[in-house]
Structure formats: C-alpha cells, structure tokens
Image 1 (cartoon, helix red, strand yellow):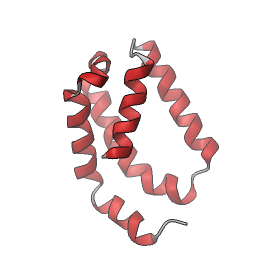
Image 2: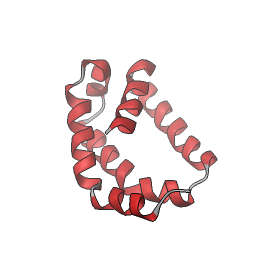
Image 3: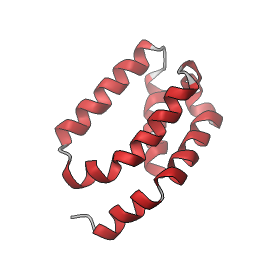
Length: 96
C-alpha cells in the first residue's frame, strides 16, 4: 500500500516532474522519434501523467492503466514513433 505522504508529494511536485520529463523527452536521442508528435501533445501528455498518477496509484486498476498505455502506444505507432523510442519514454517517465 502506498503511503499518503508519497501521493501528496506526487501531487505537490507534479508540475516540476512534468517539466523535467518533457525536457528529457525533447533532448534525448533515445526517443528522438517523439519529435514526430506535435510538441503540445507531448507537453500535455507529460502533465497528464503526473496529474493523474496519484489517482492511478490509489484507485486505478491495472487493467485501466494498461488500456491507457495500449491506446497511447497505438497512437504513437500511427504517428510513426518506433516502439523502442516509445518504451524508452515510458522508462524515462518512471525515472523522473
């Protein structure tokens, strides 16, 4: 079970975390295919991750989260983003 303190920290620092993630995605050659995605979509997605993270951690089911990432993967594939770049970006999200 996650501590309430961790959830509060995520909520408090969501903006800073999303800014850091966005900068990482823009500058890493490991996910350069993400340049095919409109910049405002990437920025919006980075913000969405951290705004919703505490909800996903406290009340989301694995199935709901999996469905969200499957849909996102399909969207990125349609935009021409290589799977390896998409997976790297997900890893960067976890590290941020």
